[in-house]
Image 1 (spheres, rainbow, N blue to C red):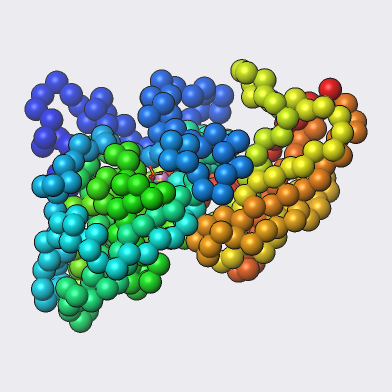
Image 2 (cartoon, helix red, strand yellow; image 1 turned 135 degrees about the horizontal axis):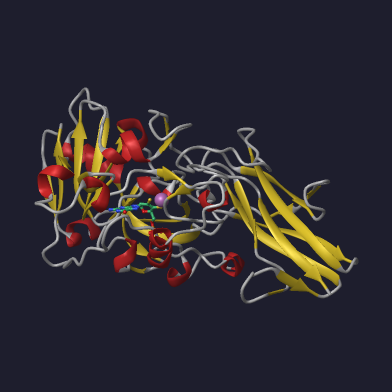
Amino acid sequence: MVELERVVKSGHSTEQVSQPSRIAAPDEAIGADELQLAARNHGMPLEALHYDITPPGLHYLLTHYDIPVLDAATWRLTVDGKVRRPLVLSLDDLRSRPAVTLPVTLECAGNGRARLNPRPVSQPWLNEAVGTAEWTGTPLASLLAEAGVEPGAVEVVFTGHDHGVERGVEQDYQRGLSFADAAQEEVLLAYQMNGLPLPPQHGFPLRLMAPGWYGMAHVKWLRAITVTDEPFAGFQNARAYRVKNHPDDVGEPVTRIRPRALMAPPGFPDFMSRARVARPGRHLLTGRAWSGLAPVTGVQVSVDGGATWDDADLEPALGRWAWSRWTYQWDAVEPGRHVLLARASDAAGNTQPVDQEWNAQGMANNMAQRVEVHVS
Ligand SMILES: Nc1nc2c(c(=O)[nH]1)N[C@H]1C(S)=C(S)[C@@H](COP(=O)(O)O)O[C@H]1N2
Ligand SMILES: [Mo]
């Protein structure tokens, strides 16, 4: 990593080019910088919760820098570091290896950030940074075994083709996973999404899939996999994806996805506020629930703003690493404003909080969704 001062010639201070992480003032509105990120990195429209598998154009998207333009014919993946036989592989080499297809629910660690008060200034997700796709690829574990990992390997570093500056640090997008996490059987080098080559924005030609982990671990546009004998201290592990009480804290690493339930908004929306309008009568509320920590065991729904909760019907998950559908009958008898909530629990005893659990970067926040519905 190169400090920005050394790469920017003149006329720009670090502050002008690259802003530190910041917490918005109490009543500060979303700024043009956050809007610019939101326009590039779109969420999944919540009505797409009706699909088991999210159509690719509706799947959320998060890219820190630019989407690289890569040619599959000349693209290569290197596997190096603490291995006895370094490898250089083409896309055809990877495609000729054993293939696995897994449905995986992917969620950005910053999902929910813009609902926090005060708001950490970054990609301003509300609830919608999620999607479930069928990813096809070859298991990483067997490739590492073939490369012959040397004793003492502690971490595997994944490097993407994309390059940028973040908080003054120029870098390739890179993430490390512990060797034990990287060697799990479900970890894939994926070259297909929903049966087609990866779209450019989702990592063409190859990305990592680390099922159960928040999005930042699933490195897109892979170019190198490096086995190391010391922990990786790169920006995205050591500074960015951490739960901190204060921007300058070291914090704790963000790892696996905490449980979350989302509701497909009932009725129909008001164009500007997106508040929902519904007719009086019986409504079948439906949604999805997931957790990367343990299987989802229950979803509870409140139709009175969180005063009382009732169990929803939960269907089997699409797979261990993908979401479950849930349904709940709501009898909307009283005209007027209603606030609906849903929250998920998992087999490890984790339940979504109803009140915010604030942290300085808005990471891994799984506060329950609130849906305002006007019955008329
Ligand atoms: N190379 C690279 N990989 C990346 C990113 C990135 O900016 N560059 N963003 C990460 C983050 S923060 C998320 S949430 C997921 C988003 O994956 P998607 O855009 O396919 O939904 O990709 C991850 N992989
Ligand atoms: Mo993310």
